[in-house]
Length: 172
Image 1 (tube, rainbow, N blue to C red):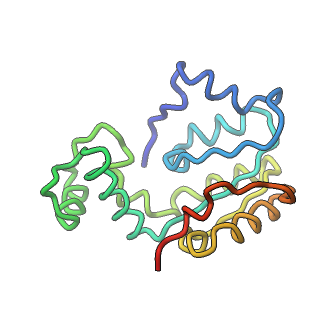
Image 2 (tube, rainbow, N blue to C red):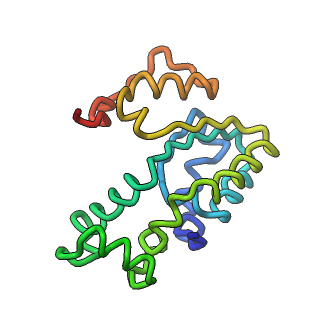
């Protein structure tokens, strides 16, 4: 699992100030690799702020295929001729040379049972709210699910503008 943390880099000081108690109001942050990092989890809870967590989890095979497409077509981190089957085999055989652990750990990172307990335990110890939902449910009705999640965490949604949330919908 990923143990490197770009968020722990000293250059990330401005980033962490975003979560400062002096910076009032709800903050939403979506960074997939945080979930795999014990260091990020500890750092978030050390900030001394009221913290609620939302986990939007993709079906593991869909997640891995999305990672494959992202690495291949967006960031060009794997050869354009590499098939998905060969990508999976390369991960299994530790032949992914990319410096980002998120790509190297593409298969194991789909095992949420390895990472969620640490987050859930830390949340319980710190009286943090937790909401977990499958991404496929969110993609099928994004605004409705977003409102349910925010309400479950005690966030008032009246008057909230969900700009571009419909762009999260997956075409049928």
